[in-house]
Length: 169
Length: 181
Image (cartoon, rainbow over all chains, first blue to last red; front, side, top):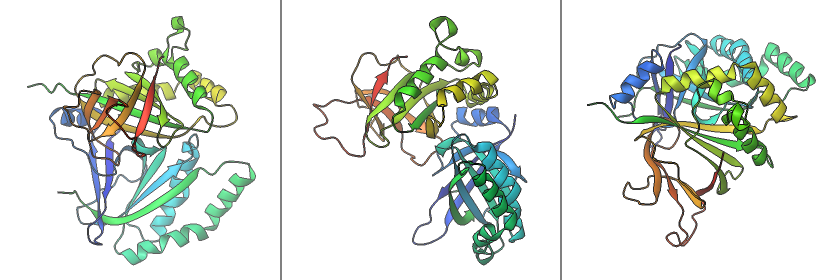
């Protein structure tokens, strides 16, 4: 049984960056044990998910972290996962991300969707990543081939959030 | 003292335009056992019958079918649905009932904890899915349940809609009718 992750985001007040809350349990039974003890409460805008790509992250509180919510066409989850692990994560690493990981949401709003977590040393480097994605010839060739084969777009929408890892009080 | 709460899963399916009847028919076939005329797929994979199935009749999104499942644990749930999804019979049935396009566009799949379920509400009438309703509301048929994920942190309840008590219909409300499976 694979580990269970809960990833959530809480917007910051007064223009401050928000918090990206990251928790994990060894498996669902471990989560159940904490629920039974009354020790699991809601996290804002959160999903429960399995880690499916990149390296399982170890992100200290206060680390500048990027969270991407990636909404996927229903029925295109496998293709989306291939695109995200094969192109998006490596492009983020080449753009300067330190740790990158992909999660497949099991519970939450707007499924199917994936979450990407990436850590950065500075926000300027993070902001240069989307143009790198759009300019990557390998990814663009792959997407053009999929369109030529008549595939629906696997990825519907991506929302990108920069914040600091941590937990709301 | 042992915690008496159980886990609930609320699956709200946003269905493509005009295909709510297809989704209800697919749900019926999946939920019912073979001797009841269904495929027996849920029974085969240890998925309990939903506590109730609803279709949206007012609110956004309108083309929505909702299922409420009580689970003994998140671990039990995590075993059952992936088991169904790995079954070739499910894939064949899903592809056949989809036809050219997917029936389901999007799913809100939320986990809650709360007291064990009461008897399923009987009869006709409309039900409201609401957040933050007080425990003392005698129209509540399920809840309040505490959410563990999703955007909305407020407790979730299902209560009977009463036109006499609710003089106006809030446009943010979501009203559902019960579907007999």
